[in-house]
Amino acid sequence: MDRKQSILEAAIKSFSLFGYKATTMDQIAKLANVGKGTIYTFYANKEELFSEIIAGILHEMRSVADSSYNPELSFFENAHQALTSLLEYRNKHQLTVKLLQEKNELGTRVVDQGLSRVEQMIINYIKERIEAAIKKGEIKNCDPEVTAFILLKLYVALVVDWEKNHPPLSKDDIANLFQLYFMNGLSVKG
Image (cartoon, rainbow, N blue to C red; front, side, top):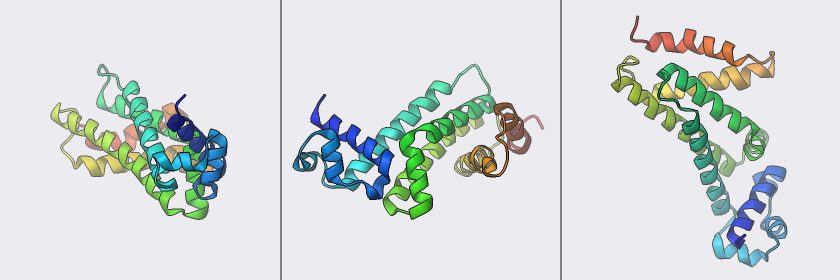
């Protein structure tokens, strides 16, 4: 394995265990079994290293969403599948879980910016799908970016926020609520 990849993997492990703020370049060097100076041959600082890791997460999330897309299904079914897959990925990926915890507990600026990039990628992905659905006449004309934002926030509310004080909703329950509260309003069928 090349040294840059070792450094990336060590950084992911350290950020996942300790969070961004508590991770040091010394820890990353030790985990990667390289000198600290070697890290600086690839990355100017911890923030740049973190940014590359976030870019990798975004790429993985795009792959997760793309793999859930089925051209045989309706926009509504695909939107549900993609959002469910993305939120499951985000909530089970050890690094994103730790980053969400750090953002909530410490409000680390760099972490907040990284998670904002993740959210914006999801919104942009949904926006692309909404634009395609509008062109195909599957849904009403609407502002795709605002609609994507609302769609994501609805899913987060139903999947994450609801579970803080209630039993989890099933995928079918979420799909039904999604249809009731969101998609009926966009449907061209009335």
